[in-house]
Image 1: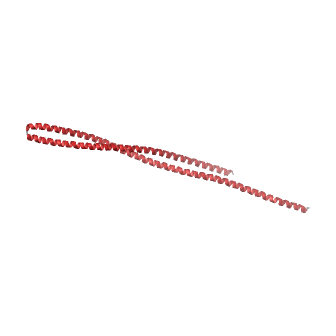
Image 2: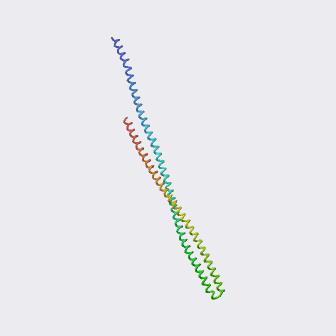
Image 3: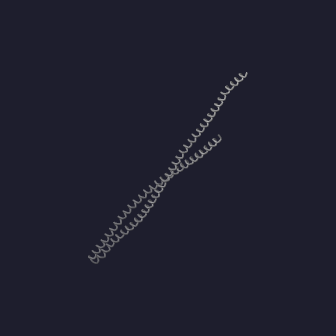
Amino acid sequence: NQRDTRHAEGTNCRDSLPNTLQKKTVEKTSNIAQKAAQEAKAASEAQNIAGQQAARQVKAQLAEKAVQAAKAAEVALSGKEAMVEHLQEEVKEARSVVREETSSLQQAQVNVNAAVQAARQSQDQVYDSANNFLKIQLKTLTNAVRTAKSNAANAQAVASGAQRSLREKEELLEAAKRRVDELSNQLQSARQDLANTNRAAAKANAAAHEAKANAARNKRRLAHLRKMRATRLGQV
Protein backbone atom coordinates (compact mmCIF):
# COMPACT_ATOMS: atom_id res chain seq x y z
CA ASN A 1 0.00 0.00 0.00
CA GLN A 2 2.80 2.39 0.82
CA ARG A 3 4.37 1.54 -2.56
CA ASP A 4 1.07 2.32 -4.27
CA THR A 5 0.79 5.57 -2.35
CA ARG A 6 4.34 6.68 -3.35
CA HIS A 7 3.65 5.70 -6.94
CA ALA A 8 0.46 7.78 -6.98
CA GLU A 9 2.24 10.82 -5.48
CA GLY A 10 5.03 10.54 -8.06
CA THR A 11 2.50 10.34 -10.83
CA ASN A 12 0.69 13.46 -9.51
CA CYS A 13 3.99 15.42 -9.35
CA ARG A 14 4.88 14.50 -12.92
CA ASP A 15 1.39 15.59 -14.05
CA SER A 16 1.54 18.93 -12.22
CA LEU A 17 5.01 19.88 -13.62
CA PRO A 18 3.89 20.37 -17.27
CA ASN A 19 0.92 22.45 -16.09
CA THR A 20 3.22 24.82 -14.18
CA LEU A 21 5.60 25.17 -17.14
CA GLN A 22 2.67 25.81 -19.47
CA LYS A 23 1.28 28.50 -17.17
CA LYS A 24 4.65 30.28 -16.99
CA THR A 25 5.04 30.07 -20.75
CA VAL A 26 1.59 31.61 -21.28
CA GLU A 27 2.35 34.43 -18.84
CA LYS A 28 5.70 35.10 -20.53
CA THR A 29 4.07 35.11 -23.97
CA SER A 30 1.37 37.47 -22.71
CA ASN A 31 3.99 39.85 -21.33
CA ILE A 32 5.92 39.79 -24.60
CA ALA A 33 2.75 40.48 -26.59
CA GLN A 34 1.77 43.33 -24.28
CA LYS A 35 5.24 44.83 -24.49
CA ALA A 36 5.21 44.49 -28.28
CA ALA A 37 1.83 46.22 -28.44
CA GLN A 38 3.13 49.07 -26.27
CA GLU A 39 6.24 49.43 -28.42
CA ALA A 40 4.13 49.42 -31.61
CA LYS A 41 1.87 52.10 -30.15
CA ALA A 42 4.86 54.21 -29.10
CA ALA A 43 6.40 53.80 -32.56
CA SER A 44 3.14 54.88 -34.22
CA GLU A 45 2.90 57.95 -31.99
CA ALA A 46 6.56 58.74 -32.65
CA GLN A 47 5.91 58.50 -36.39
CA ASN A 48 2.94 60.87 -36.09
CA ILE A 49 4.97 63.35 -34.04
CA ALA A 50 7.88 63.10 -36.49
CA GLY A 51 5.50 63.73 -39.39
CA GLN A 52 4.01 66.73 -37.59
CA GLN A 53 7.47 68.08 -36.80
CA ALA A 54 8.49 67.70 -40.46
CA ALA A 55 5.32 69.48 -41.59
CA ARG A 56 5.97 72.18 -39.01
CA GLN A 57 9.54 72.59 -40.26
CA VAL A 58 8.34 72.87 -43.88
CA LYS A 59 5.70 75.43 -42.90
CA ALA A 60 8.28 77.37 -40.90
CA GLN A 61 10.55 77.40 -43.95
CA LEU A 62 7.66 78.60 -46.12
CA ALA A 63 6.87 81.26 -43.55
CA GLU A 64 10.51 82.39 -43.58
CA LYS A 65 10.45 82.54 -47.39
CA ALA A 66 7.26 84.59 -47.25
CA VAL A 67 8.88 86.98 -44.75
CA GLN A 68 11.94 87.31 -47.00
CA ALA A 69 9.66 87.98 -50.01
CA ALA A 70 7.83 90.63 -47.99
CA LYS A 71 11.14 92.27 -47.06
CA ALA A 72 12.24 92.21 -50.72
CA ALA A 73 8.91 93.75 -51.74
CA GLU A 74 9.40 96.48 -49.10
CA VAL A 75 12.90 97.20 -50.46
CA ALA A 76 11.49 97.37 -54.01
CA LEU A 77 8.72 99.63 -52.72
CA SER A 78 11.26 102.00 -51.15
CA GLY A 79 13.18 102.10 -54.44
CA LYS A 80 10.02 102.87 -56.42
CA GLU A 81 9.07 105.62 -53.97
CA ALA A 82 12.53 107.17 -54.29
CA MET A 83 12.21 107.00 -58.10
CA VAL A 84 8.81 108.70 -57.96
CA GLU A 85 10.18 111.44 -55.71
CA HIS A 86 13.13 111.93 -58.06
CA LEU A 87 10.85 112.18 -61.09
CA GLN A 88 8.62 114.62 -59.24
CA GLU A 89 11.65 116.82 -58.55
CA GLU A 90 12.65 116.65 -62.22
CA VAL A 91 9.13 117.61 -63.27
CA LYS A 92 9.20 120.48 -60.80
CA GLU A 93 12.55 121.67 -62.17
CA ALA A 94 11.37 121.31 -65.77
CA ARG A 95 8.26 123.34 -65.01
CA SER A 96 10.43 125.98 -63.38
CA VAL A 97 12.54 126.07 -66.56
CA VAL A 98 9.36 126.43 -68.62
CA ARG A 99 8.26 129.36 -66.47
CA GLU A 100 11.67 130.98 -66.78
CA GLU A 101 11.79 130.43 -70.54
CA THR A 102 8.26 131.76 -70.89
CA SER A 103 9.20 134.88 -68.96
CA SER A 104 12.36 135.23 -71.05
CA LEU A 105 10.32 134.76 -74.22
CA GLN A 106 7.91 137.47 -73.15
CA GLN A 107 10.82 139.79 -72.42
CA ALA A 108 12.34 138.94 -75.80
CA GLN A 109 9.02 139.79 -77.45
CA VAL A 110 9.05 143.13 -75.64
CA ASN A 111 12.59 143.72 -76.86
CA VAL A 112 11.58 142.84 -80.43
CA ASN A 113 8.65 145.24 -80.27
CA ALA A 114 10.92 147.95 -78.88
CA ALA A 115 13.51 147.31 -81.61
CA VAL A 116 10.85 147.41 -84.33
CA GLN A 117 9.47 150.63 -82.87
CA ALA A 118 12.98 152.11 -82.75
CA ALA A 119 13.54 151.10 -86.37
CA ARG A 120 10.30 152.75 -87.39
CA GLN A 121 11.22 155.87 -85.45
CA SER A 122 14.65 155.86 -87.08
CA GLN A 123 13.05 155.60 -90.50
CA ASP A 124 10.74 158.43 -89.60
CA GLN A 125 13.74 160.40 -88.48
CA VAL A 126 15.38 159.69 -91.86
CA TYR A 127 12.52 161.30 -93.71
CA ASP A 128 12.21 164.15 -91.21
CA SER A 129 15.92 164.80 -91.34
CA ALA A 130 15.89 164.71 -95.14
CA ASN A 131 13.08 167.22 -95.34
CA ASN A 132 14.69 169.50 -92.79
CA PHE A 133 18.20 169.36 -94.12
CA LEU A 134 17.13 169.72 -97.78
CA LYS A 135 16.14 173.23 -96.88
CA ILE A 136 19.50 174.00 -95.34
CA GLN A 137 22.24 172.46 -97.41
CA LEU A 138 23.02 169.35 -99.32
CA LYS A 139 26.12 168.49 -97.34
CA THR A 140 24.41 168.65 -94.00
CA LEU A 141 21.55 166.66 -95.45
CA THR A 142 23.94 163.99 -96.72
CA ASN A 143 25.59 163.65 -93.32
CA ALA A 144 22.27 163.51 -91.58
CA VAL A 145 20.97 160.88 -93.98
CA ARG A 146 24.15 158.85 -93.52
CA THR A 147 23.82 159.03 -89.77
CA ALA A 148 20.14 158.17 -89.88
CA LYS A 149 20.76 155.22 -92.19
CA SER A 150 23.51 153.96 -89.90
CA ASN A 151 21.17 154.21 -86.95
CA ALA A 152 18.44 152.48 -88.93
CA ALA A 153 20.87 149.69 -89.91
CA ASN A 154 21.90 149.29 -86.29
CA ALA A 155 18.29 149.22 -85.19
CA GLN A 156 17.49 146.68 -87.90
CA ALA A 157 20.43 144.56 -86.79
CA VAL A 158 19.19 144.75 -83.21
CA ALA A 159 15.71 143.78 -84.38
CA SER A 160 17.11 140.84 -86.37
CA GLY A 161 19.13 139.71 -83.36
CA ALA A 162 16.09 140.01 -81.16
CA GLN A 163 14.07 137.96 -83.63
CA ARG A 164 16.75 135.26 -83.67
CA SER A 165 16.80 135.27 -79.89
CA LEU A 166 13.03 135.00 -79.92
CA ARG A 167 13.16 131.98 -82.22
CA GLU A 168 15.79 130.36 -79.98
CA LYS A 169 13.63 131.01 -76.92
CA GLU A 170 10.65 129.47 -78.70
CA GLU A 171 12.70 126.38 -79.55
CA LEU A 172 13.89 126.10 -75.95
CA LEU A 173 10.31 126.47 -74.76
CA GLU A 174 9.12 123.69 -77.08
CA ALA A 175 11.97 121.45 -75.90
CA ALA A 176 11.10 122.18 -72.29
CA LYS A 177 7.44 121.37 -72.94
CA ARG A 178 8.41 118.09 -74.58
CA ARG A 179 10.61 117.32 -71.56
CA VAL A 180 7.70 118.03 -69.22
CA ASP A 181 5.46 115.68 -71.23
CA GLU A 182 8.14 112.98 -71.18
CA LEU A 183 8.72 113.32 -67.44
CA SER A 184 4.97 113.37 -66.81
CA ASN A 185 4.63 110.07 -68.70
CA GLN A 186 7.53 108.60 -66.73
CA LEU A 187 5.95 109.83 -63.50
CA GLN A 188 2.63 108.22 -64.43
CA SER A 189 4.38 104.95 -65.24
CA ALA A 190 6.35 105.09 -62.00
CA ARG A 191 3.17 105.76 -60.01
CA GLN A 192 1.51 102.76 -61.65
CA ASP A 193 4.56 100.64 -60.92
CA LEU A 194 4.48 101.91 -57.33
CA ALA A 195 0.82 100.94 -57.01
CA ASN A 196 1.59 97.45 -58.35
CA THR A 197 4.49 97.13 -55.94
CA ASN A 198 2.26 98.23 -53.06
CA ARG A 199 -0.25 95.54 -53.95
CA ALA A 200 2.50 92.91 -54.22
CA ALA A 201 3.95 93.99 -50.87
CA ALA A 202 0.50 93.79 -49.26
CA LYS A 203 0.00 90.27 -50.63
CA ALA A 204 3.47 89.23 -49.46
CA ASN A 205 2.79 90.62 -45.97
CA ALA A 206 -0.55 88.84 -45.84
CA ALA A 207 1.08 85.57 -46.91
CA ALA A 208 3.81 86.00 -44.30
CA HIS A 209 1.23 86.74 -41.62
CA GLU A 210 -0.81 83.69 -42.59
CA ALA A 211 2.30 81.50 -42.65
CA LYS A 212 3.30 82.72 -39.18
CA ALA A 213 -0.20 82.07 -37.90
CA ASN A 214 -0.17 78.53 -39.35
CA ALA A 215 3.25 77.89 -37.79
CA ALA A 216 1.97 79.11 -34.41
CA ARG A 217 -1.12 76.89 -34.65
CA ASN A 218 0.99 73.89 -35.57
CA LYS A 219 3.32 74.61 -32.66
CA ARG A 220 0.40 74.75 -30.23
CA ARG A 221 -1.07 71.58 -31.73
CA LEU A 222 2.26 69.76 -31.39
CA ALA A 223 2.61 70.87 -27.76
CA HIS A 224 -0.92 69.64 -27.08
CA LEU A 225 -0.14 66.26 -28.67
CA ARG A 226 3.03 65.95 -26.61
CA LYS A 227 1.12 66.77 -23.47
CA MET A 228 -1.55 64.17 -24.30
CA ARG A 229 1.15 61.59 -25.03
CA ALA A 230 2.89 62.34 -21.73
CA THR A 231 -0.45 62.02 -19.94
CA ARG A 232 -1.13 58.66 -21.59
CA LEU A 233 2.32 57.34 -20.76
CA GLY A 234 1.86 58.46 -17.17
CA GLN A 235 -1.45 56.62 -16.99
CA VAL A 236 0.10 53.44 -18.42
